[in-house]
Image (cartoon, rainbow, N blue to C red; front, side, top):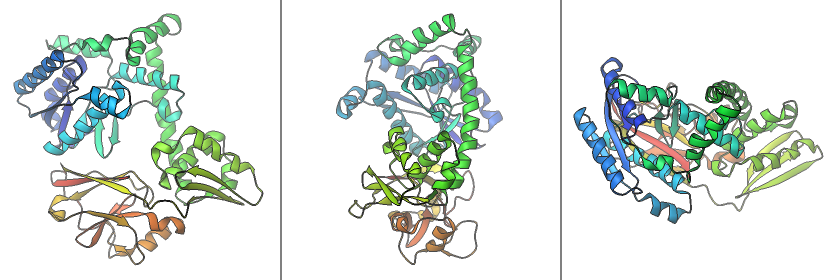
Length: 430
């Protein structure tokens, strides 16, 4: 989850789970070779009680001699402005705060206190909403959120085990009265629905849900590797798709739309289902308008994703934060977003980073290769369709292409070692 010498930012609310997480990591910091800092967010929901939580966490960080960073955000106001639920607004505010705090302190990862009971509740909520294989896999022990590494060291520990640990070490914690408010759906799952299922269906329902999640994670990893192998050809063979089951067809189409830069929040179950009938109709050329300037075209045995001629030019948003160490980019397909990478801070210095579309004649010096290579050749090797190449973004600094998102960074711009100062880049469709 973290390497020796890295700084881990521990998210601490003051509740039992996060206090146990902080104390356990603090106990193990020497053995693991980690540096720690504490982050606390006051959501502006519970008034004096929330202020008391913040003071409690501040004292705890001081007692452990750890750096402490805190903010207060008016989450209810944000929920009203955005029109989302209070729970969703609070979640968004937390992760935005983690991004700022990690950048401020140079943290390589943020540790959150999700536990095994949280995992079971999350999976049950997703089942109730009609999730697919990815949702059934639950939360991951290590994940990325807009380029920020999130780790969950307690994901295999039950809430009962956490309380036992706190009592063993005579640790105090804060109780949040809102955690019993039945107006919050998760509280109803925690205090009413799961206990009911334990009594009436399966006394080990939590264990069963966690076991299912572990199986699904393994299945998803295997199936995604198969799906990605087909996506990397840049177009899809209808004949190959027809030889697969419906579940794999859906998975491949989903990965294909992502690779083609269709906005992730637009790729829905209904969109995938609307494409499937094109596979069965083998007469001539057929197309399906996906909206947003995108269409899927079937020309006999080929399925291609195309951008309408009158569609707006692609827009990108580049976030840059200061860190230490290296975020290894998993190569997918040139131009596939969102994408993350790290550059050596010393190399960039104070020069601006510019995002632009790839242009004919562009070259870069890919890390791990000798000399330079034309982007045209990189696109050809990756089987990127010709009509998509003009909309692929590159990041430029000091007149050089320093990063081709979805591929790799340029030689000479890498972070030399895990302790070096770095710039973490996250590029998304804007």
